[in-house]
Length: 189
Image (cartoon, helix red, strand yellow):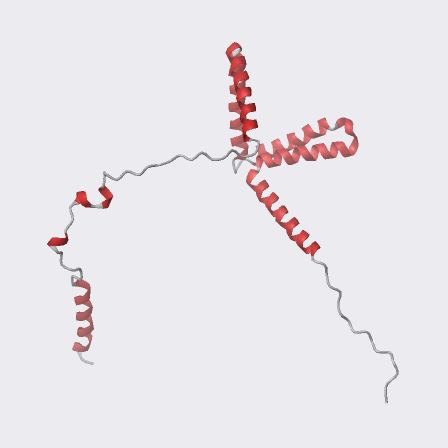
């Protein structure tokens, strides 16, 4: 092979890389910046607010919420100390919830779950053995759902999917196998 065999493809490649392949600008088709559609100031879009239909029981809950808020404001005016204490308790509860829901706080979560089980045990003291077991399990499950909300949702969704699949399997009746019965008649000649 000669050196010209290598130089020809390299020259072709270099010519393709460095060539200006864009078409030449046509002065008759040039547009000013103000004419571009991005900067059009005269076109204004009009937005319309469409009020959605209220959900079932939304009006009733709204009425109850407004009445509760009016009564709370009336009491809060007279008893500003109570309002200050309630606000402090709410803030503390939100901080505790955020702290417990934190991914790396295992010991506070274990403490909260244990506290829920003990509260259930105390509430079920007079209900016998089954009542104590049931209320303590309910308390522990409630606090576990409080501490692990995402995992609780995943568990419930998985359980519902499992129940649905089992129900559809249950609704399908199994067909009995078609087994041939042995022929016990005497042989034919």
